[in-house]
Figure 1 (cartoon, rainbow, N blue to C red):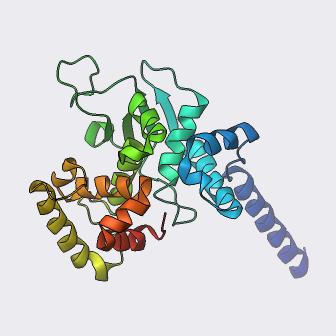
Figure 2: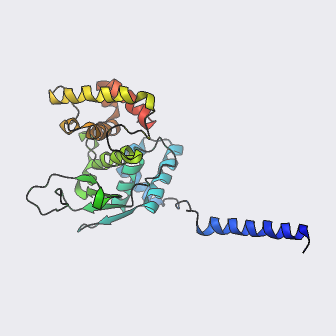
Figure 3: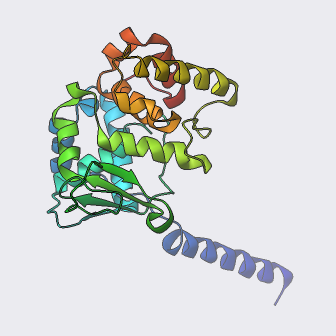
Length: 257
């Protein structure tokens, strides 16, 4: 075989190998949402309704990719296609400012029929949890109360959104630490300013001088989750009452909802 023929054969083999990689190993993009799925987003998700046509298309791509990447399982709860879309929308909203973002630290979302306790039981006497990002034995998993998830989208005026809250924790956890300073999102030069700002606001909560939910005073991580719920569900009110926090969260999430 001549040198030219050998080189041609090697190039052909490399091309075929590349094609095989593309077909069998590289993760293909998710198929687009169907008309009915887009109609559910339009009806149920106020954040989606406010987007431009171009932004809606990008949001739909994020939702479709999440549904492809992450299993959504009902635990003693009947899960509908609408419920699955609400979970995916909860994931897409806080990450919308980061096109192509994938929750690589999450494999499955479990939807429970009610609140649960620290042992993940729904029949316990003391149940006060409606959402949880797993750790240790529940690593790469999330638990959400299905009624609380539905209520979050049905009543955004309440400023409470369990889905957004838990996905904020996952964004915070993207750098390996859930401490209320999401280094994967926040430019490092703003970290100290952010930390000082939230500690001041946590003190205002403890003194009863803030309209941010009292759960936000638990620690820095929970403050981030609670403040982000408010930021995304009632952005106009939040900007008016907490302009510095609004500015910082806008910078963090790269969007002004």
